[in-house]
Image (cartoon, rainbow, N blue to C red; front, side, top):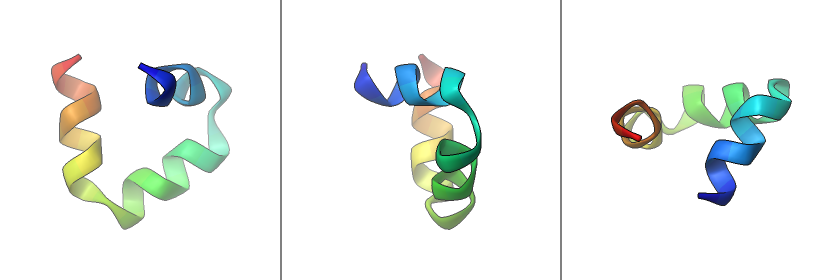
Length: 30
């Protein structure tokens, strides 16, 4: 998942996760 790669990068993804809580759950499932 491209999103997972961004998670490892960190800040930008964390900000998007805060804006989209649904996406955060999807990443946690992975």
